[in-house]
Length: 174
Image (cartoon, rainbow, N blue to C red):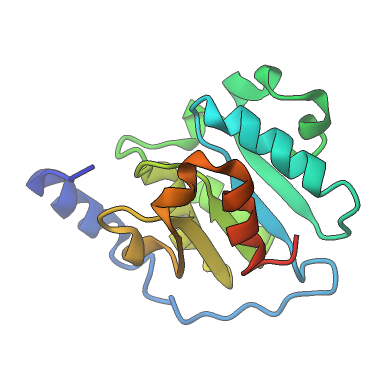
């Protein structure tokens, strides 16, 4: 998705200082080491991905959470709700990016790894991952993905859920 010139100027003006401390490094406590936030997309594939991740993480000691729209939580398996962090339209501003308060709330949790499973560009999730400065920011390849992620997943794996999970496991211990 391409920003209009006016949106680019507004985006730059509002967030120009937001990424100034990009080199900020977090010290992770024992509980935060290996922590993962998975941003689930709105589409149908999200339900299958959520089931796959839930199946694979049953015996995992790492802190794993799923970021899900509050309106969609009832469509997911009940087991996911204990790992879910919810957001609503109130957490999204007029530019389609997370509000400052929401970003700070997620930053306080100090996730070491964040994964955006949106197949297409999502202003909300891509901005959130970049703004939180985790050690690993992972997402699928699209036009501007290098600006937001430091690990880019091959788009060929989008159709193969097991392949997507295996590719993610190459970078993060799940």
